[in-house]
Image (cartoon, rainbow, N blue to C red; front, side, top):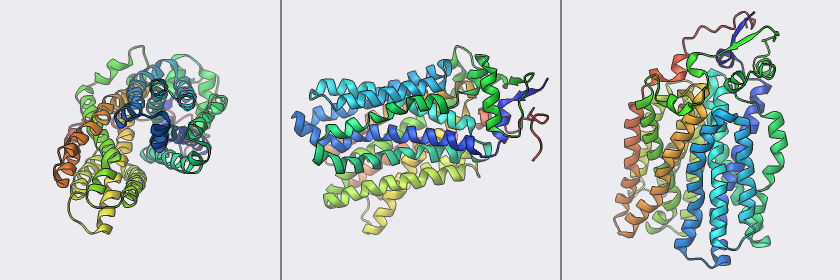
Length: 452
């Protein structure tokens, strides 16, 4: 009888077709998720005209999805460790697809907001689950890169929303882009068939046949035998109280530091996303040029996410994050200075790379920090608390803009959270992370997997 450590099996595996399949489905779901989140902003001018709503009410309509995301991050991130990530992902896809499409079939602002709130639960619930799944199944040597590459699909989804909106809103009206968002629900049967379940969940439910099949695809060198027994380190074993494990094994203080860094980072992301166009226009740039800054911001985000993931697989991810936060503070502060336009574009791209990009790398880190059994819970709570920053940012920066402060002071206000996030990340105790714990594990699969 062989004892198989599934954590070590995943760590030591080489990238193969199975990993590619997990990456494909995770990235595709994130692209749909990003489309659903961005579609309201793309269609907002047409929605306001169609429903005859004032800017204040329109802002509440947009924010309804953000409130939903906060609940989705925490609730669906937590219950996924109890019902299985595959079921949680399917529930999320159904929620954001059906209710975004439903929002496109109403002309009532209140009903629209309710539908978007429910869709937001699905949008938010997807994030912790696909990050946890990608982290669990990725080989250790390329884990950060896999997570950040997958999560870059968010930017792809946003750009897809812009392209679809540009071609369809004028021709078919704003509801058309919402109806397109309902198409992913058709993929649910394929997700059930192709998206693997979490290994700790399968062990807890004693679904060993399914686990043997996944293990053999994860590591082709492993040949399953009926007598094989699957094991996890103690801290990776699931139970019915996953939240308390965020504070066990000396992880409590680091958990609070993650929450603080997420809150600060999401504050910067949404401050720039909401107000960069307005701030650049007030600096004397035309509306067209100001919108170009937003495109550069998102392009920089993709470069920052992928580049940050690449660096994190070669250097300590904690140190990479601190460096990115420092660069965020510098680049955002410089946006308020009188710089040549080409240099200003570079600073905007760098700001995107070190805010939106940093948030994606931060997701990779928190996914590696917590044990398998509570990974979705840990990511969900970090995102849920961080969503407070996303909600506060448009209000706080909007208040500062209304005070007619100098441009430099507005950007300094956006840059300060980067310093706080860098300090919070510095105080995360990496020695308490699951990834650190397993770095020196002597895998128990030597007899199961032939040497390469």
